[in-house]
Image (cartoon, rainbow, N blue to C red; front, side, top):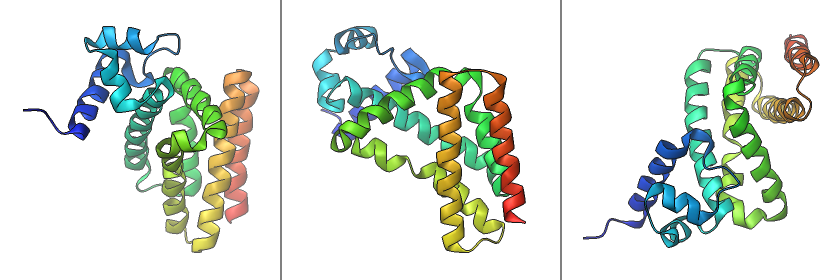
Length: 187
């Protein structure tokens, strides 16, 4: 008896995490090479993920979902500024650098092929929602909380991209300066 399509996809995703970790397969590996490492036929990967970018998007979406659960747990009682600092610390960790690179690679692809990465693009707002909830806990209005979360998410991602491109202490100092400015603007 065959398993439902979603179940097969989930098993493949877990196999991808088990084999390649949370960053997924290297961009240098072909679908055939990935399939060989997993011990499956490459058409199975194509069936469930469509393409190499689709496979990466699925792996990174799942990794980001797991990250957001961890960030939500860390930040469940934090205010907006403290949550921004926790998010920066979480994503600027050197252990997540490869995944951050893969994230920005897919974001670039999604800019050109929005429809091909619809699931990935839709999930991008999850982090902003966590920040919005923190801003609401701090007493912001719904509109202010939404705008603050969009600004903070964009700034933190921009700083993370800058850190990947030019890794030096100035980027971390700029991140801290941005986060510190949030305290001044919310008081």
